[in-house]
Picture 1: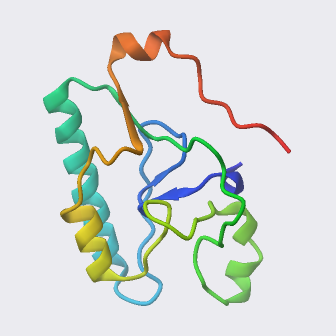
Picture 2: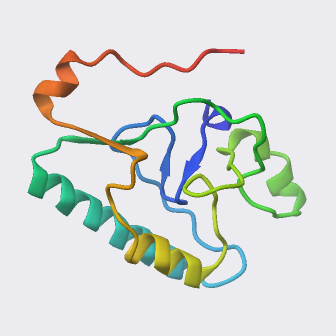
Amino acid sequence: DAGRLLNYKGVMLSNMPNLAVTFGYTNASWTLKADLTSEYVCRLLNYMDQHGYTSAMPKLEQYPNQTEPFVDFSSGYFQRVMDQFPRQHTEKPWKLHQNYSADVKNLRRGPIADGVMDFTKAEEAASKPPVLQAAE
């Protein structure tokens, strides 16, 4: 259920390993964000390759009490399915920016190993229990 996940840097989803998504800007050229997303994913894959990692997962320890909709978009067709989109938090890295300058800073220049991204190697992944979120 994507509606129970949190967006991570506008690129990945909480506790979902090796999955990246592209969602462009609703207030600017879609491809600006798509390009930044692609750059970030390439940086992430290069980092993983350099360190021998096989899995990268934005790890959410505890679901926050306060979340916000994925985007602030008022169109009816969007509002009708908003509950099916991931949520966002009010703080980085779980905050989705609709701002190119902020995204350049976070995605192009920000650290890959930021303390939230959890990396594992193949042998470690086999011994780790799966990350599960409690159902409501």
